Length: 169
Ligand code: DAT
Ligand code: MG
Image (cartoon, rainbow, N blue to C red; front, side, top):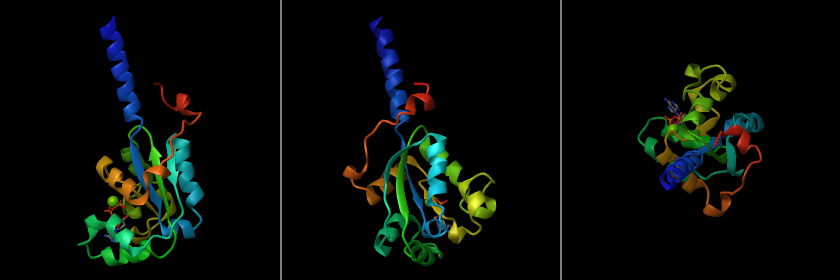
């Protein structure tokens, strides 16, 4: 009996932990300038993910160089940093089951020419250098990016009223 209760509890807490995966999503300067912030947020809200943090900032070149440090050796890196620092952006943290992987699906392929219709990039942009949105590619990079853009106090703890209707447990 105790064993059964313990295993139910362990399954329950594993499911709860899985539902708490987080990703870093950011509307890029072209997304902001083109008035697409609301539309992009809506995609994540309607999917059922939980918003944990959001702000509106004009990021420094230094921060963006850190954000894209993995790409520092690529020929497009200087242009990427210039583009990303050319106007304000909307960094966000979203939470939910498999949100990193599913977030990437919602975004579509890096090059909008290859992004499926129905995805954010597939529907709303044309060129790789103006692909309107960033999304973390793994849980590890998500955690790094969240820590780079937000401090602990900015990550809001709250319980959406819809959760019991989005998840079965
Ligand atoms: P993603 O943003 O899909 O994670 P990435 O991390 O490989 O893609 O690259 C980061 C950004 O750099 C990407 O959103 C747009 C830009 N970029 C990537 N490849 C590029 C290329 N070949 N030419 C110009 N910009 C590129
Ligand atoms: Mg990337």
